[in-house]
Length: 330
Image 1 (cartoon, helix red, strand yellow):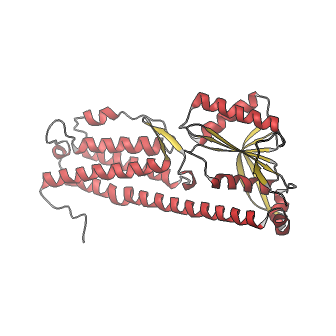
Image 2 (cartoon, one colour; image 1 turned 120 degrees about the vertical axis):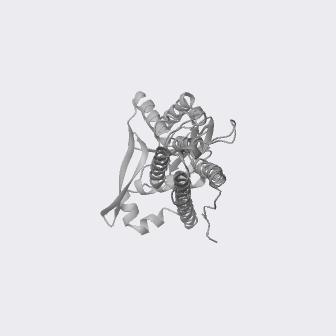
Image 3 (cartoon, helix red, strand yellow; image 1 turned 90 degrees about the vertical axis):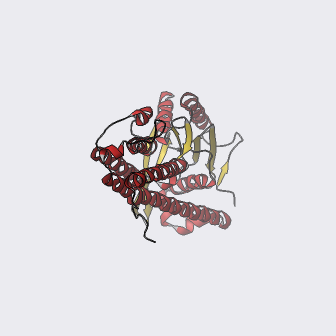
């Protein structure tokens, strides 16, 4: 029994000329754009390159999954080229084996013979896979378990299941981490900032011990700018309009009600972005400020950064009011 999927470095694989054109186009895209963009940006650019080459390239091509001869759902591939080559794109630090297993799964259920996994990281990484056993339609591969097992050895099938299980576990862990971060920002940090503002006068909000130090007003502007740039823009894709120096140069007095509304609105927008974020994309790379960071690093930075400055806000509030805010009832 032959291996049903392999990396091909020789000259005897199907659609060699077309796959070479796709890989060449990917390198051109990376040379022009570099790293740090969303996968969708690279997908759009690569599709344009392929169309310019005269190739048929369909983006987010929907494929139907059948069970027992009936449609039960569908999935989409990033690109389907010339009706035969599945192209899956990533924008992560490095390719993980689970990505290759996912491509295997797509070829197995769709019956397409060739797959390319392309990563637009610091450099271009390419994995070329060929389905070498007789191809299966999406209907037969899913509706006839015996046919499926006949084309996949027991060892290979176990590996696939293990990879899929690991991917599911990783996604659950990612979902749990996002839920944790959302809870910290919305249920713990935001109420404490609003409580501090409610306790303070307008003068207290803009008081500073000396010129090099920041007022609570400055810190709230700074937190709003950071959350917007890193989460709403960096992960959510909104336009970056941040003016970081102004967050510190502002002397107010911006009314505390306006500051309350600003930080609450910003956090709610960020929470909506995180609520719709796919935890499977945690390792995708974003270019924020001057840094290339993963989405995991981005979210972690925001929560850590917020906690740091929240501590300063609470300290100044206690200093000005001379009272215990009783945030912890131990």
